[in-house]
Amino acid sequence: MEQSAINLTSIGKALFGKTLAELQALVVELGLTKYRATQIFEALYKGRVESLAEITTLPVEVRERLAAEGFVVGRPVIAQTATSVDGTERYLMRMGDGETVETVWMPEGDGGERGDGSEAAAEEAGEIDEIESVGGPTHRDEAAMNGARGEAGPSTSSGAKDAPDSAQDDTSSPGRRKRFQDVGTLEKSGYRRATICISSQVGCAVNCQFCLTAKLGIKRNLTAGEIAGQVASVLARQGIKVGQDRINLVFMGMGEPFLNYDSFMDSVRLLSGAMGIPESRMTVSTSGIEPAIRRFAQETVRPKLALSLNASNDTVRAEIMPITRKWNIAALLEAVDTIPLGKREYVTFEYVLLGGVNDQPMHAREVLALLGGTKAKVNLIVWNPGPGIAYHQPTPEDVAIFQKMLIDGGLPTYIRRPRGRDIYAACGQLKRTVAEEAGLVEIAAAQ
Ligand SMILES: C[S@@+](CC[C@H](N)C(=O)[O-])C[C@H]1O[C@@H](n2cnc3c(N)ncnc32)[C@H](O)[C@@H]1O
Ligand code: SF4
Image 1 (cartoon, rainbow, N blue to C red):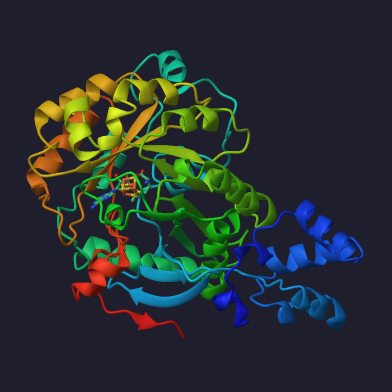
Image 2 (cartoon, rainbow, N blue to C red; image 1 turned 45 degrees about the horizontal axis):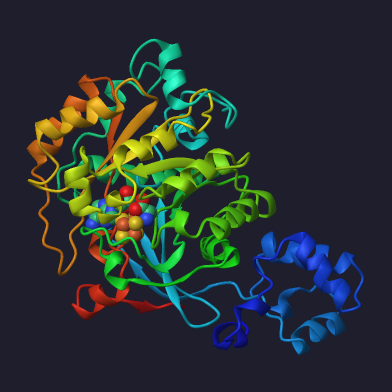
């Protein structure tokens, strides 16, 4: 790995993240032939090189010229790792200017992608071979055409299959063990399946009261190269063969992707166009930035959308997510309605269950009133605790009742499997310093 990739203060000299057109402009400016840009492009995104020296398709003098001009590959570097008992790996990713974010590797995923209409979810459920991604009616139109709530959604039995595995991490249960054995089986059958959770900002400005990342505040946006580069670094570490292995991406790590919209969307284009991961295998989660949701609805290439609803009315939501005072639930749902959905595509509504705050039957009824009759599915997330955050986990009984009420009301409802809670890698736990300072996580230096 080139030393300058770590010490570089200017991230502007990073090649990783540049489009082919940008690389072409760059090489032409240096007086090199345009074809060199294609070689660099291939090496960066397909060859997964970490340093200029590894771009052996380029003549030595061209590599030296690039180095002399200060250019580096500049892909995020895995500086530290933590491994969970459940197989999840959490990486501390260091950027060119020394800032760090966290990225999570989840063999087999966390269930967050289930039932969202994505290719991955549908294949997993054995529903389809192929899926239409954009251009259909909006989620309310489609539901109306189906004539019934949740008619096109996963069956309630499939929701029940993900049964409340309680508010506790249950990695010792036979069911859980079987899921991990399945990874080995998949490997033997020739491919691997995993989900990578990506960060979009260093910290976050949104200040959700239940989220550990919020405690960081916002330091800066990540560039498109830094967002896509997290994926490239993890794929390289895991030896993943894109096109053969099944990789899902969730933009659910540190930060609010829709407050870094342009870089987020540029990274989507790099990941799909240059790195070959279809956008139908990507899901972006937003806390609800209304103008950005409307913009997202206009994109021709876009991931699936997950909206962090997290409360059934504006009063509770404003308490736990102060951003609700800017854009309330009604405004968010109207914006979501403008998204043209594929035939089997759903909008996911994430709902973090906080004991005694938003997890009671009256809240479930309000959720049904908000989302009933739409092409929505709900992902319940049992709150993951963090130091200094004074919420409680819901009881397993309350989780079960909440899920059953939504399913009975016609909303496909899943419970997200918590991954890597023991290493602070689960939803909303990505805040390295707090966890480490509290002595809760053992971090190993990356090999
Ligand atoms: C960490 S956020 C990142 C994406 C985006 N900023 C958002 O809020 O949707 C991903 C999901 O984690 C949820 N979350 C945050 N803190 C959590 C916690 N402590 N336990 C469980 N889920 C949490 C959020 O509500 C959101 O649905
Ligand atoms: S839940 Fe999402 S938007 Fe809210 S503070 Fe955490 S990362 Fe930011």
